[in-house]
Amino acid sequence: MIETQGLTKRYGPTVAVDALSLLSPSARDGARSPAVTPDRTLDSMHVTRPKAAASTGTTPTGTALTGTATTPGTPVRPGTASGTRGARALVRAVGRAPLTRRAWAEAAYCLIGFPLGLVGGVLLAVALALGAGFTVSVVFAVLGALLFITGLQLARALGGVHRRLAALFLGDRTPAPEPLRPSGRLVSRLDARLWDGTGWRSAAYVLAKLPVGLLGAYAVLWWLTGLVNLTAPLRWAVFGQHPEPGSPEGMMVLTPIPFGGSPEADTFAGTFLAVAIGAVTVLCAPWVTRLVTEADRWLIGTLLGPGQLADRVRDLEETRALAVDDSVALLRRVERDLHDGAQVRLVAVAMSLDMIRQRLNEHEGEGAGKGEGASGGPLDVARLRQLVDGAHHNATEALTELRDLARGIHPPVLDDGLPDALATLTARSSVPVDLVTDIPERPTPAIETIAYFCAAELLANVIKHSGAGRAAITVAQLDGRLFLQVGDDGHGGADAGAGSGLTGLMQRVRTVDGRMNVESPEGGPTTVTVELPLHA
Image (cartoon, rainbow, N blue to C red; front, top):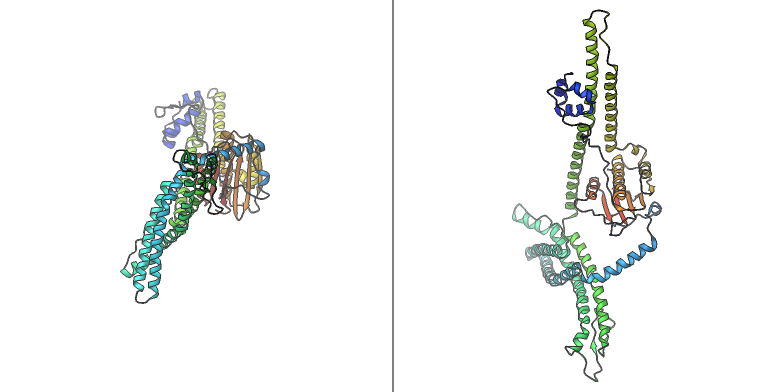
């Protein structure tokens, strides 16, 4: 029996137990000691192997990459079937739009925002106009500055109200800017409030809300005129809203178009023309409202949110935290894989070699005890060969695991560049992949690694989840940025929300100031684009 307490003391009981489980049964019987009781076999061991991480994305606008580098790589899409599905989806979207909660919420936002924007815009315009008038005079310059400050505080307050309305009705939650906290003497505090950048941006929004609010009221008018026209037959038959016999004027049919006049219904049958006009108006109303709300949403994000510098600082803080978390997770994974895999096998090799050495020492000791020239008995060559084979097997497996671990950190295929690495990746795919690359300037190794992992992970998602018959990978360099686009003709429905694997890819891309966009409607196709800088 071999004494293993030294190995236990040197490597720890857990590693010694794992190493014992890698030895053959007879070797384990000879290696056991009271200090080590193996409770796991090789089949029950779980060795975590590194998996290639990946990340994906699209262009900021979500459109396909253009140019010679992308056209051949467009995913194959069935032409007629796809066009029919698209037309049907468009008809369904137009028909359902007036019945959706979003459409009514946007109409309510325009309805509430009009009087608020009108009153707030007029008050702010008056305050700023009076302030500007008084500052021209030396005597009333202080009063003019106070009016400016009052107007800016009013603009900040109104901006907060508009942000809350947008969050309530539009679901657009714009982060509030930092509150102004001036310090110092009275003159310093007044000067800080007078040059408040956030206040001036809020004032710009409140003033811009005047025309936008008017457009919103006009959008609500489409809803009202459409709904009124839909009730034309009812108003004619039940409420008697029809012209008197012999009257040259019929019942007016309302239209939201301010020019061209309005048609009239002279008979009851003519009221159904009003119904048709009302139906068309109601179907168009959600899209008119959406145009206004999208413009308002852009103004809110541009003028009522934090400034560009504050946004950049916040984004850098987030990406720095993501980079730190990613590096910590990578170190923990490497440590776990080394501890549970290669270290255990190397300890098993050391134990096998110790057992061989002890066998040889015992044989030499027996020979010395019988006198010079005497034999120490037959040497169990089969047993020694078994120990050597076990040590060789564990050493080979340890090298394999170390090689896999190194490949997970930096794939060796990237030594020849990203195009060759992607060619190797697509050649091993079980789904046919069209690969197009156009990279005149080679990115830095960190960017190449992220792009490769993104492509690998996205291609794995295509194989596992999309049900696609064909995929396409396009890599192109445009305007000093690297674009990686992965598309497939599968069933779509990929979600980049919380809990999805795409979330981890987004975070990894953000660590190098990149962006990712996912377009995956139900029924497909799916297009994911990653935008990365050329230099990390």
